[in-house]
Length: 294
Image: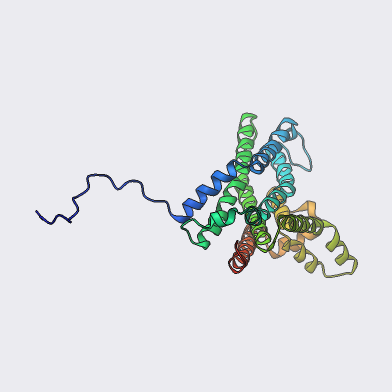
């Protein structure tokens, strides 16, 4: 045995808990902060409340264009969520980083022993989890209600709807992070987010399509521009799951089905918004690193 007085004695204590990684630290911090915020409580109440409202109105017992039972309920809920979900995401996210900068919290947040990349993308992932969690609860409630009422529960379609909503949420979350990184004040961020949302809603059916059709532009080009809108891609995919022939879209369905097919279009409606959202978030990260953080 060594007699050197400076030789440390073997420790009998356990090594203790493994320290958290940077991503898990940011996830835990962002989740705990957002769970205490009013926007998350209000957002959860609206998302789940819409499902409960549709259930209490007995919409699953009605029949419209052949849709009845839980299919009718899900179609109605998804169409409403298409208008509500992006607005909540882009408005609350666009104010996040610029709001922290104005309040002086950003300097404190960046003092954590994590890299800027870990902090930014960890926050992005945490926001995505927070946005999707209430929607998942609402869809589970719909499935349980369908089983209790004896309806056939299309679990496969519920899973596809969950994927579509996740793709749409990723797209608008990335857009919100980009706006927040470029804006210098919460007023600018809020105004820009509302303007972009209104523009996308207007381009859904009204302004651009009517002008292009009036100018006798090729129908393929008009439909291509419409499908580049993530809202329109989501809307069409939500209909194609229960209406594979896209009867509700009229003649434009031939262009979509001939070029994509049902499975191909569903894959496009999931992959395109995710890729667009990650690209926008990446551009926001580049701007965030180049800007004056404090």
